[in-house]
Image 1: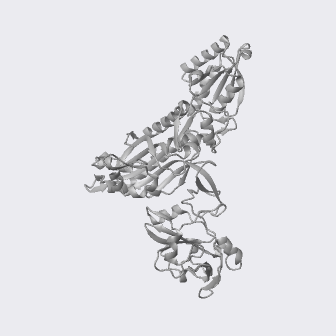
Image 2: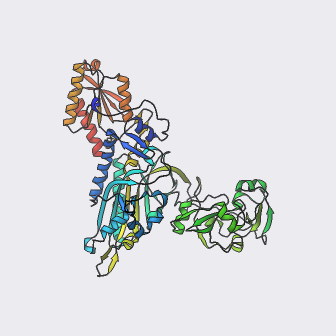
Image 3: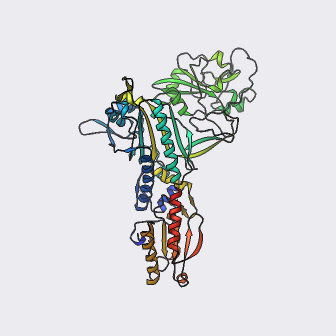
Length: 573
């Protein structure tokens, strides 16, 4: 392809609103353009990259026996109501009503549709099955940002496994794990598999594939002494024991005028109310009912852990006007001592604790000498707190690190949740009717593309691996107005194209500096520079984008050399 004929609208400067490296560089390099918040057009060279990621995914899915399907993006509400997720998905689901007044939604995922189709599988002899599609998904994201990393419309590879039992699901899960590892490796990513929350998807187990990046929105916890790794939403750590001393007897009131925070209370009464000696009382509305959530004062609640523990669809912090009628005080003076009319769930870090301080459910007052086991009727204990950097690993007592990552893939063991709801039953070997056991597996296509940029770029621009680069080599003709120089560039272009190398001929009448900057910005792995001065010596320059190393190569040898480089890179993938 000739650059002079391509639509590559590069920008000289970073867009003011773009913060993530992938957002800046994909915009500057002419790969994408924003239509509206969370909606992006994929321009020609962006589509080439996207198609290559798509192709790698298809190859690896086909290799594990996947069969490609294409499912509707517009779903009748009834199928989501049947599974119970119409309400559970909340405001993130795009919902609409047709001219007949029938509710529909734009699909965020396709478990329900797959389970309906699986109803036509009748015997265990027809299992296992792996069905996959690469299709547009929609999410009413409240705060789209970071370019194609967090959007409202995106392309996902979603696959689904169907098995007769749990053992079959385990096999399918492992096959997808292997396929995902290969996909991300071939895309040039070092993706780490981590234990994750299943969230609204449900199921017994899930694993995310994370790429370390400051642009990531997930926090990952890893250990320096063993292979422990988990999303912060599922991570655990050793909670150091605190010596509370013997019980001081019954609780005592403590006047705390104007004090509303853990820190303010600790500063006012350092002898008795250090943060680790306080009980933090949070109030949530869980499926319409007020619930008290208790943690140590120096610990932070991870809301997803609360969601996973309770297994509820609707959960939110309570408003002050909901709290006061129930507890008699405003936030800052709340506690659980003597509360019997509301459910109480507490973090394990409070188990057995004595001589603590908590709100008295009376504005400007707290209680001291609180013994959790004696004074608070905890209905349920759970791991609710977030892990902090430097804490100890529960497996080996090593030191835990916490870092940001981009989620590029997620695999779930769904079990029979959807098959039971949608009536997908098969006859097993014993002749009994049993629900199909399902798995669900997702990869964000554009997100993977952006993750590659986050992982591989420098001050000049993107550094694409050969496997997903829009072109393998750019031939930069320094004097496009010189017939002899242009002829050599065209000859090399034709030779490389005939050898299967994807070449881009920069024949534009631009200054060399502009051509070099553009080539480095869009990140093509190799550049052949053709100029009159070197041609007089029978030479061209070959530059490797990754390290910007440049060597002089005989004009008659450069085609063979580039072919070897490209083929070696592709075969390594």
